[in-house]
Amino acid sequence: MRRVIIAGNWKMNKNISESIDLANSIKRSLYDIEEVEIVICPPFTSLSDVNEITMETNIKLGAQDCFWEKEGAFTGEVSAGMLKSVGCEYCIIGHSERRQFFGETNETVNKKLKVLLKENIKPIVCVGEKLEERKSGRTFDVIKDHVVNSLAGISKEEMVRTVIAYEPVWAIGTGVNATKEQAEEAHKYIRTLLGQMHGDDVAKSVRIQYGGSVKPENIKELILQEDVDGALVGGASLKADSFVQLVKNCL
Ligand code: PEP
Image (cartoon, rainbow, N blue to C red; front, side, top):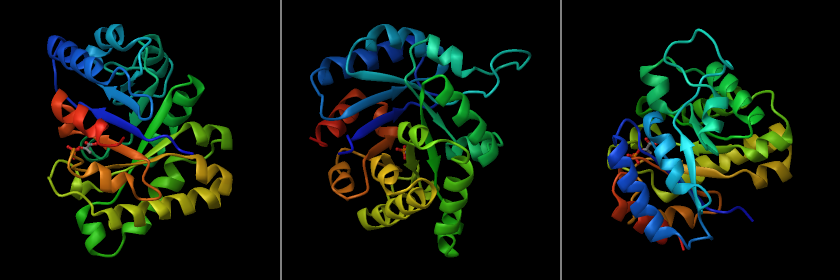
C-alpha cells in the first residue's frame, strides 16, 4: 500500500519570519494527521528555523535542490550532507524551473539523486513534458527520457526510497491542471517504465506524485486515480489555509 505524500514547494518565497509563521500554522492544523505524509520545502535560508518547528513531528522537511559534490570550491552550492545536517528528509531535484532556468539536465539530476540516496535523503525527482512537446505527440518520449536517464544506475532498494513527481510543465503555476485522465495516463506509463527497469514489485512500491496547479478543489479526484500517490504543490502551499485544506481533502 503506497502512502499518499503531499509536498509543498515554497520556491523562492518566504523570508525567515514568514517561513516560521507558515510552518507553525501548518503544524498546528495538521499535527495529528498520520494517513498522509506531509513534506514542506522552504528556501535554503529558512531550513534551519523550520527544522526547529517540524523536528519530531509528522511534518517532514525537504529542500528544493542540492549539489552533487561533498564540499569544496563550489560557490553558492549546498551539499546533500549539509541538507542532512539541517534536518532534511527529502530533496526535490530536476524541477522544470531548474531545467529551464539553471541548466539542469538528466545527467545532473542523476548525480544529485545518487548523493542524496547516499546521505539517506529521499529524492523527489521531477519529470514532465512542455506544452509544445505534448502538442506534437512527444509526451511519452519526454517522460521516458527523463525517467530512464535521471534514474539510471540505482539499485532496487534505492528506487523504492525515491519519489517521482510527474509535473507537466504547462500545468505548473498556470491554474490549468492535467485532468485526472491525463495524470493517470502519464503515471501509469511511468510505472510501466519502472517495471521494465526494476521489476513489478519495485514499480508497485514507488510513489508517483502529480504536480501542476493542484488545489484543495482538485486534489481528491487526482489521488483517487490508481497510480497517483500524492502531489507536489507550489502556489497552494504558500498559504496555510489552502495547504491544510489540500492535505485534509486527501483523507
Ligand atoms: C511546482 O512548482 O512544483 C508546482 C506544481 O507549482 P504549482 O502548484 O503552483 O503549479
